[in-house]
Length: 85
Image 1 (cartoon, helix red, strand yellow):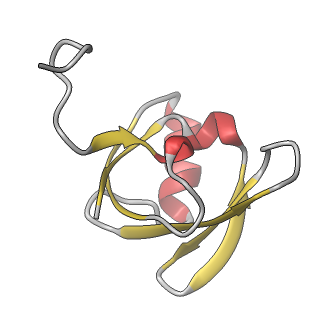
Image 2 (cartoon, helix red, strand yellow):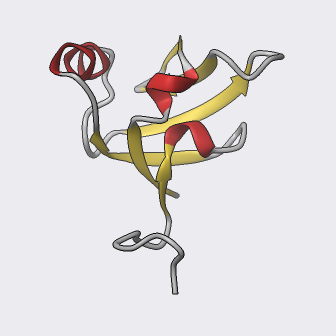
């Protein structure tokens, strides 16, 4: 049984993935302006994302979304809930 009530198997935060891992975006938490910005980058529910690498101190992280590489802060990545693939 999961340690977190209501947690689903395979569900985690984008910032928890290991480099090279892929996932599918399920939902984004946060303020409306931040959610809108992340969605404008292509991070919408149902989209596949891959974590490429982390900066030496762990922040920011590089992602591939729909063939485009970009970086976001770890704090933003931790607001994006994904299912690992």
